[in-house]
Image 1 (cartoon, rainbow, N blue to C red):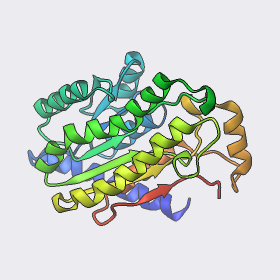
Image 2 (image 1 turned 180 degrees about the vertical axis):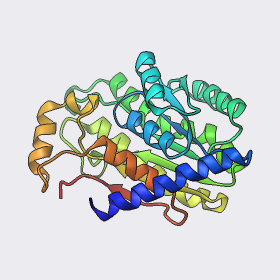
Image 3 (image 1 turned 90 degrees about the horizontal axis):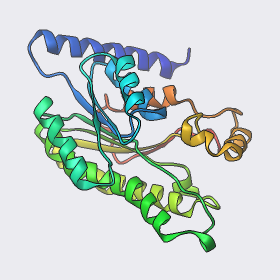
Length: 263
């Protein structure tokens, strides 16, 4: 077992204990919101945060059955809310449900995303608009809607999930790469804007994982595995554990963490 795993286990145990202590004292258990939380990395993040003592709002847009399965796996005081993150009105209603249920938010994980690959010469305008609407628009909408609740909590964390494609670009992924580069820029700007409210904003680049999105790009996933110096793909559970670790910190903000072993 490596030092990071040991640190994560200790911190998770401390966080879970703190959650139980808060309950016993009649205090407030920390609240997290995870977008795109029914599958893949989002699901693992919901489960990891719940096991670390958080009550979690799992956001989904279409996979209702999978969201309920994720909630059962997470246990604890969690709930699911259907909302299209690219629609500000729907995100606003989701934030209002969280406010009524818990009255605060400590952690926001912007995980929801999509891709529609294609070469620029033949790329459709509506595909471009949809990728931007969800990937960067979703981060903007959740920030606008949940920031009052995070400020009310006395500070917290926003974790935006980006991609190595946003730093390096990739042929056939102009829209996806541009949207994920925008997520990085947004994260760095928000880190500066929100520091006075004790809100830490960081960006995580998970790398290729065996999730539904990864499996949809089979050849690219095989190439990523070949390029990895470890000859393996990223693990959603490890990435989720890293996110749990990151939201326990108090002095880390404005950083871009690449968890991909392609150098």
